[in-house]
Image 1 (spheres, rainbow, N blue to C red):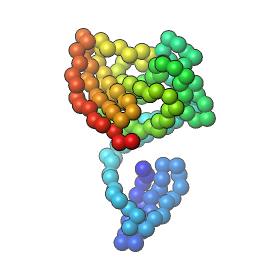
Image 2: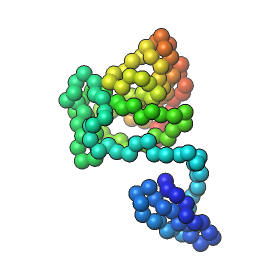
Image 3: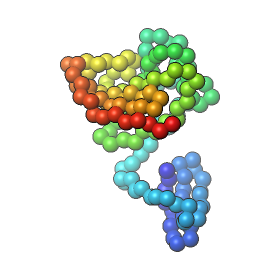
Image 4: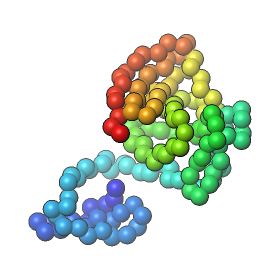
Length: 149
């Protein structure tokens, strides 16, 4: 992701998000996606646990070397003041049995509140599903997909 400085038949020049200028042959370019003029980065990190809300067990999540690690089942949340249209990207690694539930557009950040409104992503190895939770406890399945290895 970055600012497109130039593009011609031979090369592309991009000002990258990390501040460096990138030059590449045009043949290396696979696609270009233009974002709206009001695009901005809402969050880049983590850099610490500051600003994050943890669930009941405060010892589950830890910040280490630029990443969050968990040593069990726990909740970690933050209000990003998301707008109607967002792109969310993150890296994920695990060494044991894996299950990640991600709640978006919710007002509760320190626990899963299935009586409120939210979009719930359920990620398991090889599988993902999405539900829309509506106030009062009802839910609508939006879809599911198998994920490549």
